Image 1 (cartoon, helix red, strand yellow):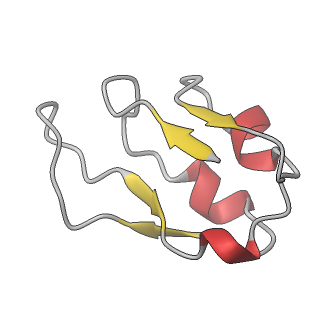
Image 2 (image 1 turned 90 degrees about the horizontal axis):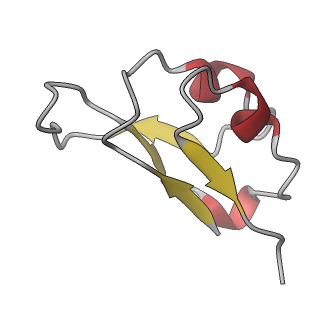
Length: 67
């Protein structure tokens, strides 16, 4: 339901700061760009508010509707 395009993410962590339900953590996996991207660790908490998607300056996050 939350997709992060790691090729677009620069690791600013705006999504982590603005998520009201603390869904994200910083991944322990490094990307080819040398960034530790955010990871939706607590996906069950997500209400699909899309705040992370709206705040991402790199358009690296897309949130699908919760089913």
